Amino acid sequence: MLSVRGLNHFYGQSHALWDVELEVQEGSCVCVMGRNGVGKTTLMKSLMGLLRPRTGSITFAGKELLGQPPEARARAGIGYVPQGREIFAQLSVEENLRVGLAARGKRHIPDSVFAWFPVLKDMLHRRGGDLSGGQQQQLALGRALALEPRLLILDEPTEGIQPNVVQQIGDIVTRLRTEAGITVLLVEQKLAFARKVGEQFSILDRGRSVAAGAMRELDDTLVHRHLAV
Image (cartoon, rainbow, N blue to C red; front, top):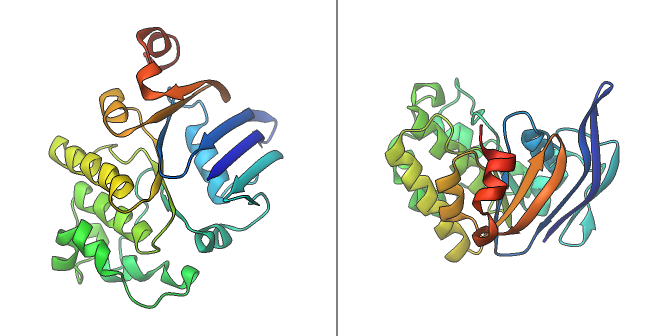
């Protein structure tokens, strides 16, 4: 479904991504892993069109995305939950959920959003900034799912979230794939969470793709070399 080839990105003179490679098969959950500052969020923002790589290729469902704006990628069926959630604190829950509907020509919030996150239906008129961290993460997920995406990109969805909500998010990620048929690309620092929800892994180290494979192949040697602090 998603193929990344030879992706290079610079911040000024600083080379942040070095010929990055990534493959995401339809219906899978791929976890992008690595220590802080190795380029994971830069990669996600490049996939979503929020950053413009200097060279490389990003194809989604066989179509080249490089050079396409973020709204075109949303229309193509890519949902995005950024690191830190980035909800609109002064807008209501309902307004947050509606904010991206126009990108796919929709007017109504799908009922499936409230089936996944019933708490959002009870809080439609509350401001996003008044929600707890876990509720805000559910709102960010609901906002992305309102577009009914084919591919859902999640950048560290468990960051700063209490353990019981982490468990809930893990269950939902698995069900999105197995029940709704949504392909998931996930950035995650928590090894136990990644192993629970992921089928495949891809490790970045200093901006380079250094390892990839089935999650069962993520052994102690790779963890110590590329993930341990």
